[in-house]
Image (tube, rainbow, N blue to C red):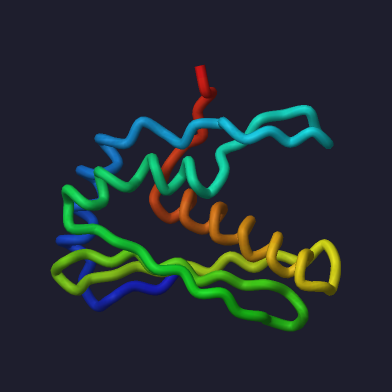
Length: 123
């Protein structure tokens, strides 16, 4: 993980945002494993209001490292402070669909981990 020189204001804001987050609903279905999971939209929905209320935002940038897909997630605070992490995954196939799928997975995993959002059952 990389950070700006100071993350005091960001840490305070993220702590407050996390206290307001209810979790990302497991509303998507994986028929192969017969399970439910939190998709990228539900992760973004879980963080949207708490992030906004506490001056937080994020950006994600895809890239490639040694044939693997990487997505860098940066969480920023209105103070200018930031933290960032990189999620690296192998594509399932070396085609557009394989790379696109790996990017989507890495975006979801990276954002969910960086924001500290748990997955919750969609009851």
